[in-house]
Image: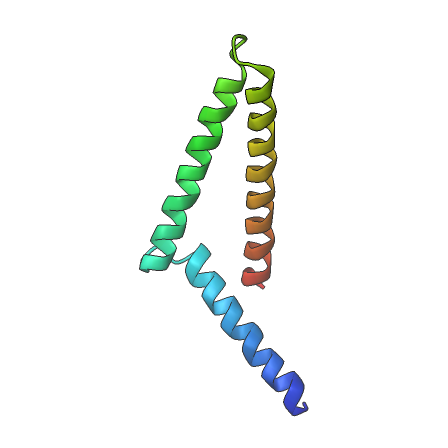
Length: 88
């Protein structure tokens, strides 16, 4: 193993350790805060989706709601990719 691949391996381990702490360790402040943030985003997403089903909501607001739903979906897709990477 050459020095460059060794340094890259150490950096990958540091990133994976940080992601593990962020995504899986609920005993650390970082993990608890990330979990709380995730729950709040889910709650807001559900509430925004519910508001989008009201007939009296304007089309402009519905476009904003759809944009927020796409952003939340992308955020959680990225989180899923990080979980897969950290779990290896």
